[in-house]
Length: 289
Image (cartoon, rainbow, N blue to C red; front, side):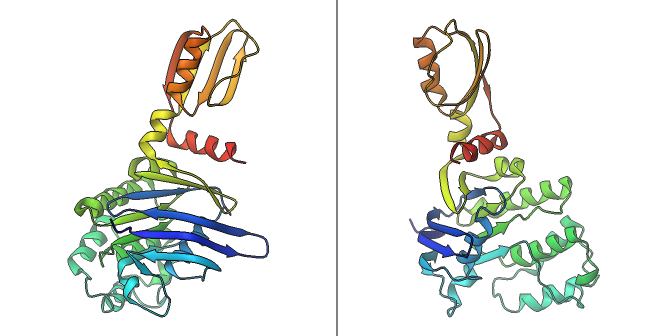
């Protein structure tokens, strides 16, 4: 199957930071959440992918086409919303949308009007007079109305209130319904990721630490409490241990393995608790420091 995007041994060097080499891909119909602290390389990855900056080595492909900045065919397949929203500032939102629409043959005025209504976007205002949240909305309308096959969203819900964030996630689910489109999504709001993503890739200091299906993470990572009458014990696949006397609380990254180990060493009153993606992300990034 052709991938929505494929990064192969991609690197980018700065004076104080090195990204990669990265090997990362996404299939059509899927959502890949990109998780990492500030400065970890998320935005740089996306900038390399969409051609805003040139990688030093390696390759980036969009639906099988190299992202050559001198060619335009691959660009019609992507829609990018980043942390900066570029408009003609003295034009109204409506005029900005009308201008951009002429460059995209798949542009849908019907979709644009639907999004404007759902976002309650005041498109009669000049771009420079829009609030930060409404600038995000205008960028999203601009991108979603041309039906790109790959959406690349870098902190798309920054500046949006919870109601609008929920509306955006509903819209993104609708985008995925035909099974042909894909979303590469970076955010600090991990509750959004937990609702939307199929897979998660964790990056820190320019390196991918782990890529895994979201459901595998929530199935495998568990908090476990138990009683054990031994003080010096090594636990399998445990990333955090707390105890008061014989009462233990641990965090396991492989619940079944840890559970079997606890049974083998005679642990009692074993209880498990599921963990949220936000908690799991913290421990994955901390573990790989």
